[in-house]
Amino acid sequence: MLARMNTKHIEKIIPNYLLYSNSYFLVITNFEGEYMYVNEAFQNRFSFINENLIGLSYLLTTIPEDHLIYSNAIHQCFTNPDSIVKINLRKPDTNPEHYSWISWEFSTFKDENQNPIGILCLGHDTTEAEKANLQAKK
Image 1 (cartoon, rainbow, N blue to C red):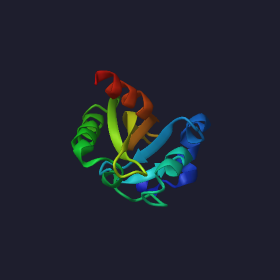
Image 2: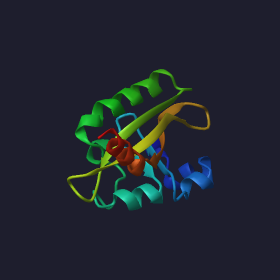
Image 3: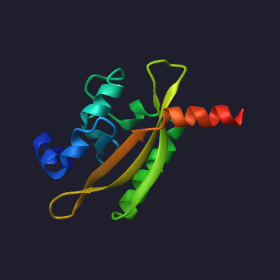
């Protein structure tokens, strides 16, 4: 199980360009939505929520109105383990009156034997594009 995988084991499976990306957030959760691994880019961006996100629920780092979107994506990954699920989620911002938009691709994270053990989430910040889009619609 993923819970038994340590950071070094996860880092052997995932390519370095994702682990150490400054542009992309890499997150691995268990099927219950608890953070099992976050790369430095994600940790740095959302450390204002909690200095250590490991073991915490995605609920803490996702706007409540988007919780169902996340749950549906997890379900899709579980029922279609070879698919990629694309979603947009809003995350809290340091200013409580704002939030960040993150575009994600979720896929089933598998061990060396191809057994599903979690969800791999690869995301990038689209906040500025979303703000521009909203402004253009006004």
